[in-house]
Length: 391
Ligand code: AMP
Ligand code: MG
Image 1 (spheres, protein in one colour):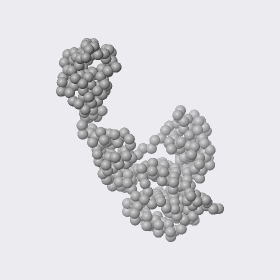
Image 2: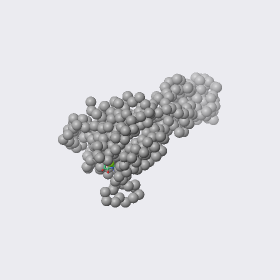
Image 3: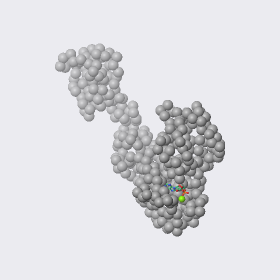
Image 4: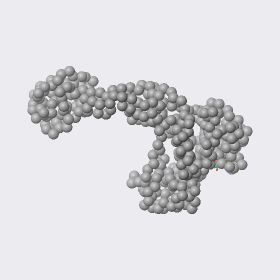
């Protein structure tokens, strides 16, 4: 089993999660559901007309029919049309008792003011039957679902004006590196602009997560320790970028050890992006990402995202697509799972883009997916299947 697979396993088995809270339905979008959503009635709740037309008995379809009344959506007719009788009915209205067919307005002619005839003897029944979508007490959405647009509609339809969801964690982001300047500054010799924070905040945003603090610090052990312990007081999760490796000024692993954090892993087995740590102490969590932008992006997407979703108790399953290689991929060492930016097109063909490694974030501007190259695989040839993850 690769290190990367071991990490996925340990994420699944983490014993932690954030608490539940109740929010108004309108605030539930993109939150993680913490209850099963149960139907409090059949859907549709009554036999419903699927068309604007005339409700009658199907056996009378060839005959001239007397129109008894007009029923609008929201109305409930207490009439029971008999032989050669019908009611004019609108889409969404309850079909009266005794009727087993609605023929469309477009399939009708009025023979006089009170009578109508169907012009299509092969008409469909055009009735949505009571309970055909779901039944009373049915589970409509499973606990752990990340609420998206259809779920919002189903929650509303099932009367969930308030929804139990995982509370939003308090997250602090700390970019570390004495070479970093903010995007508004012109880097002096030896300096670079901090791009990881913008990248990371956008990744969190896609998960509907905000941060309570966003800091950029030089590689100073004392300063980093002080800031870290201060941020810990108010945060559930601290995400570092940079300083996660074994360089002389990579202080994050040392600080975590000194502060008594339990380190679950400190490398990932993916390339790019090997140095990355996850640790916990007293229900507070730390993720230490690489400084290299592509590494940090891949680590977040492949590891931090499923990890955070686990803490949120979400049933998160990243989309992976089985495409077909349109180029020959080769590598010498295959001791890690490789992540390669690529383009996948609508035919499922995977094409190469120029990519120089972990610092080359510009390459991803033109990519729409990450190719996964499994452990111990040195080549994937043109025409062979391969998995990609849409970006
Ligand atoms: P580190 O992980 O701290 O050893 O950094 C690895 C590489 O990533 C170095 O070349 C850093 O300059 C670069 N780097 C670190 N942090 C950032 C950042 N926030 N934005 C852009 N590049 C960074
Ligand atoms: Mg650094």
